[in-house]
Image (spheres, rainbow, N blue to C red):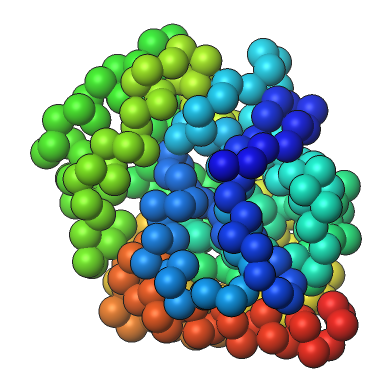
Length: 285
């Protein structure tokens, strides 16, 4: 695994190599991209795929104390990562976590490196965090709250609860994957500190909705993939995003919950390849 240094600290990432615009696969909380996208990767062979592990709780290197790990702060880290890794004409893919949108709406450094956008069943509008995750956001504001959360995740019924991670995939998230996602925060107080800062860092609804309105200015080729069986991301948000973004195409994944990469990986990979080819043939915009 490679790494680059940004203002916040060291960001680990995987780069498969390959031709064409880099497909940057982002992840949810506290997931890792290699596991979240494991079923999709075999269908992307021959394409360059880059997967950074952002500091949302599943990372293994604590960030520098005092780092801004709010939603906007995380988007800034993403932009710095794109710059440090020298990635251009990026096909930026979000699933579950939606804060990468703020790189574009706020025109943060690095935004100009994005050539296309894929929003896959992710947070949008004022749905930061989704209703099932709001308890975690509240707990994260209490000293020791994240420690208690990760200890509770040692219990299989908690890990697999249908109201939480157990409901994010119709195919099911393997239990060893769930244990892996929470292992760094169990083992390292610095990771728990970062996890808490991010989980508690959502802006107000007014700020979120103002940022969402600026998506109308994002004139990138955009793929919106929404899940028909999602309990976290309202189905109506997919259509709203497609209506708002000037160059968007909407596809409904009919057999998926939030984690479309688990539930319909071949469908999703094909859509991402089409989007990547569009960037390749258009020369970016």
